[in-house]
Image 1 (cartoon, rainbow, N blue to C red):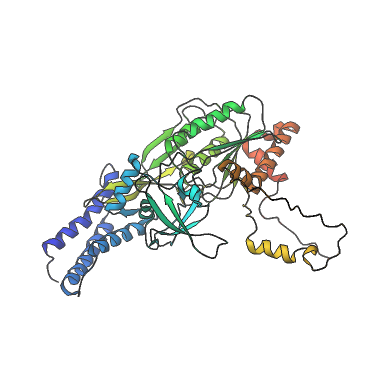
Image 2 (image 1 turned 180 degrees about the horizontal axis):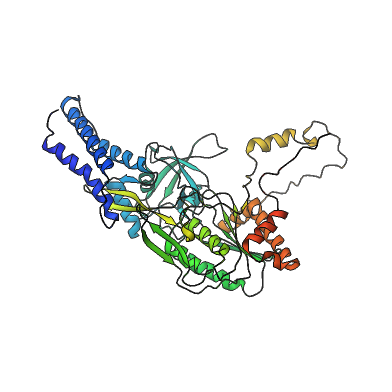
Length: 488
């Protein structure tokens, strides 16, 4: 084999420098002979390929992009959340953290892989550019400014959605129930903090609060609701964390402080040696009434910081050592299971490496990585019937669908008065309409009513969270129903 040229040697040194940056997160370098040996062997093969390409390929094109994609492919294969940031993507990320960016106002699915052909819209920020343009929850963005998302990293895709204020970005969307692709021209603008939304449910004497993301104002919004709700006694609080992909960890710690004793552990981080690197505890006195049960709604899009809050409150509630005996229950479906921490490490050529350097651990040393939070009461979300089901029911699903069916009562005369065009509903009105048909919320209300009844009839049976769950599960049916055949 020919000795590599000076440029090839530089490449090998650059590639080896990745290992140096990985160790940046640790206090002392750790020798890993097998990995070092593997790096040596395969970077030699890589250098040989580059040398042969340089010597023999007919015409090398886009060599820089080849390097970027090859390094990114390496990072992607380490774990789903590590990736290589090229100069454009890294610059866009820096701008987004410095507040100098403008976007379209959507929350995307955390589980997206580089090979996925779309961005799934998990939430649309109310009254944001995407909301005003007509983007809806669960739309799939498959193209941005004419570029297909296949093979594009999530960081790169989201950076293309951002840009100068009042500039336009064109997206193509795949929407369920629509045969054709939908095209939207969205004008970038300032993205306001995602609003929380709270309701009083007077018929059942409960309060509801949803948080789509954890921002600086989230703890204050929840505290205001808790203080207002204390004006009179109520049955329970429903905290909706469904589709919450995370946000500021400091906000989660502040929110946990509203419920837990001052100094309570929320979460720790540990590096690959199992050494604790960060420790987060509550720093304030709680304001939530201890006798009010909390029911937390989660689903498979509840991720990261949202999982930490749900898991932390659940663990403290079931701990015999915790003085705060507040009852906390988790309802819905398994959360996403993202319990890893990423660090963005600058590299040469104005690039960076986003690398998973540690994992989150809840109190009692419990990890959510890959497992998520398991609900106490598993309740699947029932979606509205699709167009095909509606059409079939209308045309074949009832006696009235049959031609010349027998009518007992005469049909009412149709109103021929011209109809006033319907005014477009606000975000709050649209959300209320969705929640009114939400089976997970409805069944959570039933659980709170059952718990309130049990507290009245036999309060001693609810002395601990474990006993309360056992009693609720004996009355409220969820999941599969065991059946035993009766022999005739």
